Amino acid sequence: MRIIVCIKQVPGTNNVLLDPETGTMLRSSAKGKLNPFDLFAIEQALALRACFGGSVTALAMGPAQAESSLREALYMGADKAYLLCDRALIGSDVLATSHALSQAILRIGMPDLILCGKQTTDGDTAQVGPEIAEMLGIAHVANVTQIEAHSGGALHVTAALEGCDCQYRLEPPFLACMEKDANTPRLPSYRRKKEMEAQSVQLLPLSNLMDADPAHYGMQGSPTRVVRVFAPEHKETRRFLEGSAQAMAEAMLGILKEEKIV
Ligand SMILES: Cc1cc2nc3c(=O)[nH]c(=O)nc-3n(C[C@H](O)[C@H](O)[C@H](O)COP(=O)(O)OP(=O)(O)OC[C@H]3O[C@@H](n4cnc5c(N)ncnc54)[C@H](O)[C@@H]3O)c2cc1C
Image (cartoon, rainbow, N blue to C red):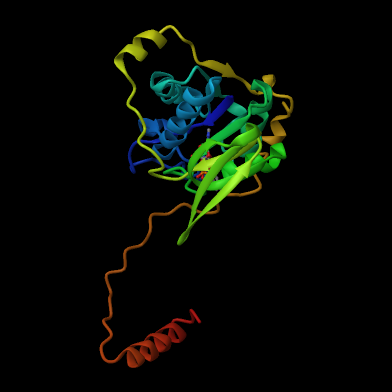
C-alpha cells in the first residue's frame, strides 16, 4: 500500500511575529516543530505499512526550515520525504495550500491512501485535508480513530463523531484526517536516525508541478485576505449577575440589547 502523509511544520511557540503590512506570519521568527496532530497520521501510516507492506512518504509545504520536521518523519519510519518549497507559495491561504499539496501529490504519484492530521496548531482550520480530497476527486473521512484491513482490498475506517462512532468500508484511494489521540505515536529511534542520516529530503519547486502557474498559489491564488492584525483586547470590566436563572437570563438579554449585540 502506498501512503502519503501530509505534515506541516508549525511554530513551536505562541510568540510568532506578524508582518504589520501584510498581516502574514513571519515564520522565521519562531523555531518550528512538527504539528502534533500529524504525529497520529504518521503512526497510522506506519502501522498500515507493517500490515500491508508498501511505502510511507511524508510531504510538507513550507519554508526550507520545514525540512527538520520531514526528517523527524523519516526518523519515525517514513521511507521518503518531499518538501514543496517555493517563494511563489508564500502567503497561501487554505485554498491555495490545498491546491499546492494536491498538485504535489499528483507529481509524486497518486497513492492508495492520503493521511492528514485533524488540524494544525497555527492555522487550525481543519480544512486542508478535505479540500485536497475534493481537488483530487477522492472520498475523505474526518475524525478518524482507526484504519484496519477489510475484505477484498477495502479498508475498515472508524471515525469518532459527537456521541457515536461511525464505521465505513472504503476502497482506496481515499483521504483520512486522523483524530487526536487515535494512537500512540512512536518516538524517532536512534538506530533509525543513523540509518536515515544520508537520506535526502527531496525538494519540489513550483516548476515541477503540473500547474506551475504562480497566479494559482501564494497571495495571488488566495481569495482570503488578512484585513487587520491585532492583539485581542483584554477588557477588565466585568459584571456579575445574581438572582434566579430567569432573572439572570432577562438581565443578560437586556445587556445584549443595550450593547446592540442582539
Ligand atoms: C487569510 C489567511 C492568510 C494566511 N496567510 C498566511 C501566510 O502568509 N503565511 C503562512 O505561512 N500561512 C498563512 N496562512 C495560514 C495558511 O493558510 C494555513 O497555514 C494553511 O492554509 C493550512 O491551513 P491550516 O494550518 O488551518 O491547516 P489545517 O486544515 O488545520 O490542517 C489539517 C492537516 O492538513 C495538513 N496540512 C496543512 N497544512 C499543510 C502544509 N503546509 N504542508 C503539509 N500538510 C499540511 C496536515 O496534515 C494538517 O494536520 C493564512 C491563512 C489565512 C486564513
